[in-house]
Amino acid sequence: MDQETRSLLNRWKSIQGHVRAVEKMLEDDAYCVDVLKQTLAIQGAIEKVNAGVLERHLRTCVTTAIASDDLAERERVIAELMDVFKGTGHLRRVASAGEAIERVAATLNAGEKPPHAHGNGEVP
Image (cartoon, rainbow, N blue to C red; front, side, top):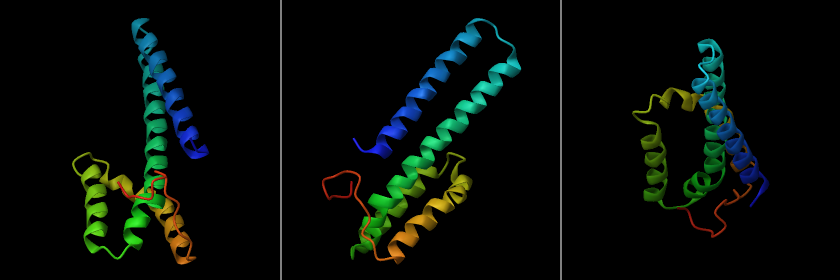
């Protein structure tokens, strides 16, 4: 397991701990504003996990597909990402992933080959 995956997994485990704490707060009839603060913090943490997974996907699978000569593969990965965000209300947040996209573009412009996270050389 690489460092990036370990970091995402650790963040996810931390979120699980916070979710259990909110469950306890609800069982104990904690002050509503305190519960809201915790649930909003959890949402923010989940968004960070999503951003990390998206960035990794952009740097690996997507850049590999886009760098290939296979037009159908390029279209597939773009459609796949659009499908993930359509209807979720999160499509507007894709713009916030702009920094990740810029880093990926800079890597490609520098002529570097994107790493592949899945280790088998294939784009899923």
